[in-house]
Amino acid sequence: MSGQKNPFASGLVRVAQRLAKAKPARASPLLFDAFLIAAAAGENDAAARVVHWMYGGRLPIPAQPATALSTSAIDGFCLAAGVGEVTRGLPVQAYGPSGEGSLEQRVRAAERTVRERLVRDAYGGGPPVTEDWASLTGAWRLNNRWRWIQQLARPATDGTPAPTEPRALAALEAYLDDWEPSARGVGYGAELVLAIDLALRHRRAELVPRWIATQGHRFGTERFLIEQALCLPAVAQEIVGGALRATVGLDASALAAALDTIEAAMTAAIAAAKAAPPRVPKIQRRRVTCEYSQFYVEPEALDEADDRMYFQDGRESAQGMSIFPSRVAIGTPTDTSHVDVAVSLANEAPELDGAVQAVAFPLRVDGPLCLRSVSSNEDEEPILLPGGGYDVLTCFYPKKRAARSSLRTFRVVMTFLPEGALDAPKCLRLEHGQPPAAIFVNPRLRLDRRS
Image (cartoon, rainbow, N blue to C red; front, side, top):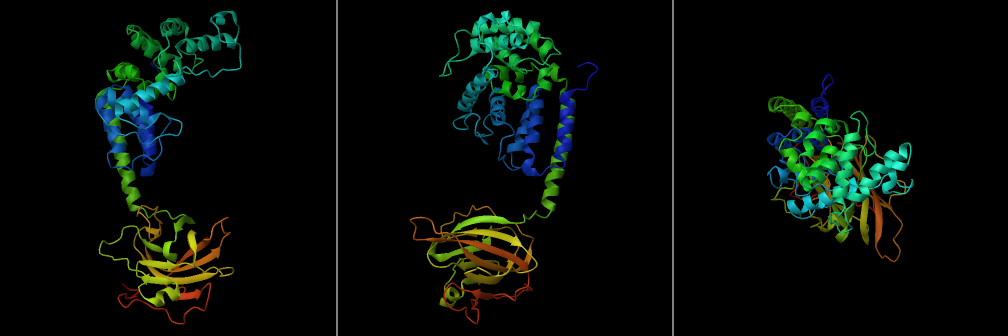
């Protein structure tokens, strides 16, 4: 890389720059890039440091993998470097290796997946793959040379290594000798990963340093080579032993300084996220079951001393709601299976046209809210709203009854209006009967808007 910018050093700078602007929940894909560079550099403590940022509690556990192989690549490194269990196989990509089993089992599963990918024919539809590839001309000569090697290295359907792997290795040795360092290659670098894996497993490790010296720059230019390599145990062991250290070109002190910068950016992003008010979506939708013809609007974290004793007075059922300062139970029309609720903020109340039931109640919001039912397990996705006092208008609109069902469903529009906008509490409309003239408030409750 003489005379050229080091792509690994540039990659770390890019991670720090993007991380400073990222939300904590989206930091893991950026940190994964930093992990790959640290792992490729053979600086195992530095790579483990990044992994523990991702999984150690400072950031949310990744909800989605950075790539199809990212979790498996971390697992491969952790096993090879002796770090031990960290990811527990999470997160899992739908078309990636399984996240089940022990660390050793997951690494074996990922090894099989990656080996199958390396030998997958991406040039189907061309001339038949035969040993007579040299008789072809133009692009198909190059393509079929690689396709022939892939065929020789292709494992059996049960994952058993092909008996022709030694022939594939010999063909790869010649291929890599002919491969111009400036040419991208038919397999986009997969040739190099496959060659190293075969050489290490077939006791030809002396070939690897020469290949890395002439072709190792591809680990810095081809996006997925490092993570593929870390998913192959023999290659991962070579990498944690420092095989790519010269290729990466970052010594321990330079890498540590870059990671310090990344950690500072991450820390600043976490602090900014905590200080910033939550972004409130325009409409937040939730489905809630309605056992006993009711559902609840409650703080995400309930006070353990709160007995949640709703609808203890008959007047509450008659008015369609059981009111508390920071939580409310809402009665539904009879025979309701579930409701689909749309929550939004507004400055003016919507019209009641078409609503079969409508109630308004005051509510104090001091954090995320949840829509729950009698059978809820307390882990519902919260509703995010700015803190403060509201008048909440809740309107029920009928939906089409499901075939062969005796129960009904409703669309519920729940609008959070400025405090006092509706002079709540009020019962505005009931499916059957007239709304009560007076609203009952449990005598234990003190509706004081100044509290």
